[in-house]
Length: 444
Image (tube, rainbow, N blue to C red):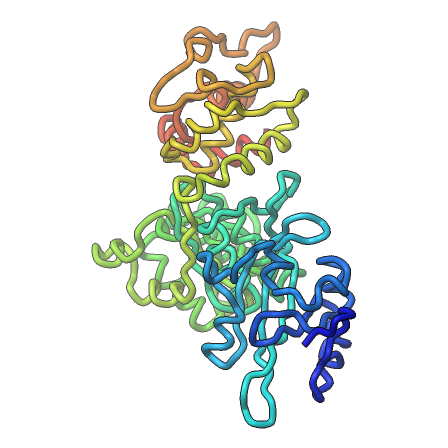
């Protein structure tokens, strides 16, 4: 297909014309996985066009010596060849801007005899994830478990399908929910989260559906609910497994009909929103024990996505650590020693990424040299002597009288820097929900 001078020898079909109207990087690839034509965006992303044409696609995008499916990755070309239809995958590619997450869509191209002659490959840069530390607001990772989860996110984002995010506390369910919203057709609409844990039935119904003035004690004015606020956007129900059983039927009716009533009102209202749910609980077990309605379970479980624990993506810890150091705004350059990194990768992390964040924030304060060593990390129940809370005064001594709210704020900040366990454990010890603890730390 490639002449000695490096030009592409194309068949009688006008393959370059297929590429002309495509803004995204695109290439025509033959059945031997050699690139025979590209558009300008592709050559700009991966290098000089004369060097790209004639090379295998996996050489150019992955820097591999063998096809990606022979190295444990999903290959969309192999998938398109096997199915005879379009195939999608998500890969990490080596681009002119460094490594990037990219969605890959491959279309088989047939000749007049109905045989696959070529493949059209179209690439799109993933906007909500990065393999770099400076990805503010983006998900960070490159491990197979992370990439597999991200591929499911990219597949479902464009649809209106209800998504349920399953995973342990601290795995980033809120961040994934926001990514699905940002990638979808409702990105310009509102993203409205509601933490379902720790709410009474009355408060939950009022938050979700709103209420009329005087509908219950304390309802001094009319209030619009979050369902109305999420119209033309996304409603995110975090910890959906904690919804009171009596209110689950109302949520089911809302999902089935798109209608609801404010508390204390007889007027029926409508709202058009996409639903994303999240929980760390086993919903199917809750169904079996009659703590969760089976009809609601099957209604929201249309597209489940399991978020990997940090144990399952321990190879992402160096990247996550760099990202955390940057977000903490450390006044000096901080790094992990080889021994500390090895210890972190061997640790189980019951609190997942949230626990890693707390651990590294605390270690930054304990390290005077800028190098975090194993003794600065509270691993396997070991507490460095300098981190004993009893030896560190709580910052409440002052000449002025503090409000109770200010006392609570200072106490929570003090505990957050010195508590050895996960934030889930800390929230339990404080008698508040983990979401409430996280919100207080974010606000203050």
